[in-house]
Image 1 (cartoon, helix red, strand yellow):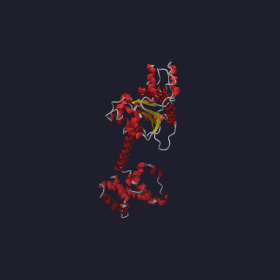
Image 2 (cartoon, helix red, strand yellow; image 1 turned 180 degrees about the vertical axis):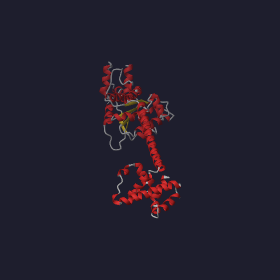
Image 3 (cartoon, one colour; image 1 turned 90 degrees about the horizontal axis):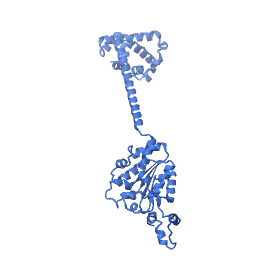
Image 4 (cartoon, one colour; image 1 turned 135 degrees about the vertical axis):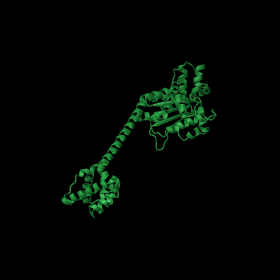
Length: 375
């Protein structure tokens, strides 16, 4: 009903009919409304027109605050039927007078009131929805583990690496140059398009696991959050979820790293002995594919550093590991002869200086460790 009336106003039908007389206007309105309502609308228009004529165009002043009332604006320029911006001032004034008279008609006043109620109801629903959203977000925040809990979780999950023996005879420790080099790389700013992945590469027995254990300890001392995974301890997996389950990281590795990364400039992932899953040692590719996916999903975060240890042979010949050959590579070196002498003298073993081949053999940490045990 109200939309029809506004349409008639907007199309000038009411004005056109009124110009031919009040009775013509009422007859015209009867085509759209019941007779009694048509008469009331006609009378309202004629009354507004008389007021407009008596006061004169320049003297008609209707409270402009109506223009700021969204309900009024919705009616006077109703449902985009009347474009108020294009109306001449006198037409706007006449419309205001006409509408004010129309609102005195109970049938129309009730409809306007219902429109207001509908709008209020919608606003209440919007408020309820916003409240539900806030409550949901609050509950999610409540359920999310605190950063301290997440840090504890990744430290606990790193037990296989953190407990790895890194001394000779449980008392002699040798600082390796590779530990310092990797630590400095972790702290450095990556160059343009430089990957955040680095590899620690060396033959079996060269001490890759010891370097990563020492690196884990150093990062912990420097308060850089670090997750250390010894792949040779978690072999029978076929998805990232399996890795997380084995490590008991219930929030997920990637969400955990993202959350910790909010409060920390760097977060580090150490993956030791990934070659245990290489094609040369395992016929199933599910496990190495899962680690590969985890690495690639974390690679996109610029504040994460990933260090992977691997044997030379597997880096060269495993199809998945070979794809990492373009990353930053740190090569394991043999022990210095002075380091070998220091270990042997500390445990009371003397070797003839002329036994150069034996000493060269002992520059490989695994050989030196075995020699100390049987010597």
